[in-house]
Length: 226
Image (cartoon, helix red, strand yellow):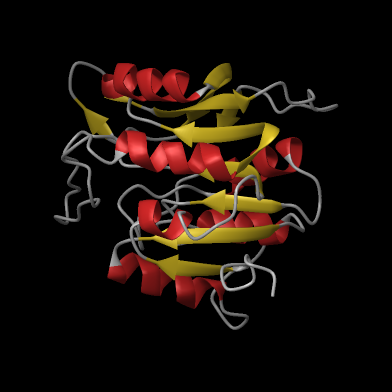
């Protein structure tokens, strides 16, 4: 049996470090993920993100991600700008090098402090020397408001689909090891790709399962949550 079959086109509950160890080397074509930002985040409803209070997972998780990613392929990772040095140090130590940077412009401020925080950001990282896409996406992308209904750090499909379509081909496998409520899987499916999702939190795992069911509430390219 194909060792990926138990994981394909579904979300698996568990710690991604342990789940990824069950996947063979170099089996993933593209990673698109939104890991914890290491900022002790809590939204106005008191919702939190698992492992956002410590960096212990950072190296072992991305080491497994690096192992399962094919050579000469891309990884897109959102991150918290206040902890960027921790992420960059791990990525570079593993052999993942920045080749691009995305800014996602919000039509609202998610928080206000020294500035009004109206953007998200992600690095485009390369393992090896991937071929440059014929039509790369812009590095500034509009970020529709998702409503924050299912996850406190929701990502709209309209921000994810251009990344998936630019850095992978139809039928390839997209990995999100910090899947939240499953938007990477929905964006991959809308783009004609296969996907593997992993989510640790039981509540977000169930939300992703429901959304990924054929009868789940979803319309292609809708502004749905992470």
